[in-house]
Amino acid sequence: MKLLVGVIVSGFPVKVVPVEFWKAYEQLASRIREGPCGLTYYEMKLSESFPTDVARNQIVRYMLSKDFDALLFLDADHVFDPTLFERLAEHGKPVITARYHVKRPPFHANAYIRHPLAPVGRYKTVHYGRGCFEIDRGGAGALLISACCGGDWRGLVPLSTESEPG
Image: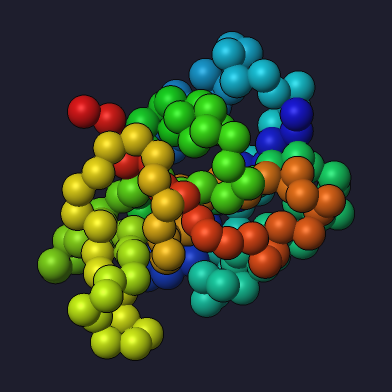
């Protein structure tokens, strides 16, 4: 399995990635190199393009041009557990995101579901949950996308989310 790790740097006032991110990334990369993930190859692609959707599209185009099996998006303004890839991949979902919290008030989780009492087009934040469960909207700051569906993964829904352990 070939994995592309797409790192999004856009949105920073200065194009400097926090040291904490690189420390966490190196731990994640070390786990990938050790082999428990079943990968034969991985590569990191950093994008400083702005806005963020342009950066993500740039990385997706690179992924498709190089025949990767999966893409793991990581936003550089977050720090993730070194087991993130393993925890997401073990569920075998074509699209799965980790639940993480936005870094500004009200600090809600970046995972949403439709709610019968919510107005049309509105979603409720998922505050609790364990393991893997279906959501209707999720953040892309820790998003794993598999190219297993004939390479046409763009329309895959619904997303799934992996909540923090514990």
